[in-house]
Amino acid sequence: MQHRISEFLVGLLFGLGLILSGMTDPGKVIGFLDIFGAWDPSLALVMAGAIAVGFFAFALAKKRTINFLGGALHLPSSNQIDKPLVMGAVLFGAGWGLAGFCPGPGLVSLASGQVKGAVFVLFMVVGMQLFEMFHQRKSKKNKLK
Figure: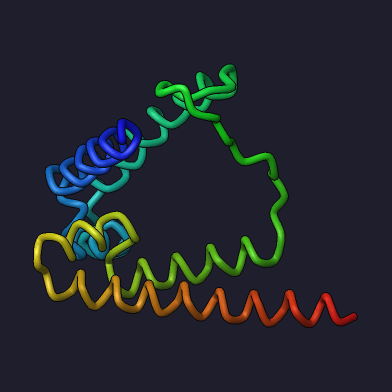
């Protein structure tokens, strides 16, 4: 139960940060991506802050084997750049540019009752389900070989 409470509080803090920084507004993202028009650099500052926090958090995490609540700490072990990673990054970037949302702000927008957020999350879930279907089909084909 303690883990669920801490997960909720961290998610709430993340959501509040997204709201306060204006990142739940698709116009902010579109403005950031419009480098030849009315460019809005505020998202770059949010990203720089997140990278700085993440840099130090991962440096600390690499020295630990358990998390702060006593559970096992599982960090990614692969650093391979492969076709699925690149394809996923391209799809993520295209969706981000078209919708103005990425998953975090999309979920916060959904929770705040924004129709745009609900549409984004719906299509995000559909995309995740399609990935699972194709991934399972590919796994079955590989097992038959």
